[in-house]
Length: 132
Picture 1 (spheres, rainbow, N blue to C red):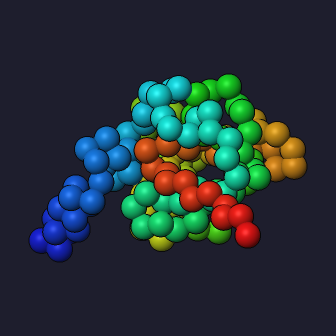
Picture 2 (picture 1 turned 90 degrees about the vertical axis):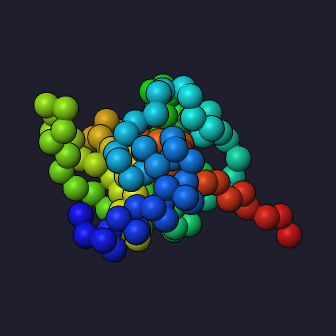
């Protein structure tokens, strides 16, 4: 790790809680049914807790029964990559803006996409819609 990388990690450690840092920067997973958003039903957008990029709309959220916030569609600011950790092959999802770990995407979601973006609440911050 270069000196600039170490400085960047120190910035993340300062900005994020220890739990958020473990999930977003070290690819940990929060316990199911423990996060703030698994049973959250307000209208608005879910943003990256690290850089505030918009990631998911509440219109695309559904109850998957898994204990994590689940969405059937993501914004363009969510990227995918192969994850071969823990003896499995999965598709990891990250914030395309800052590379924060968000969770994984699976092919067992509802129509119209058939996808389930399974996201850690700790990687998100919610911004409700303002009423005019």
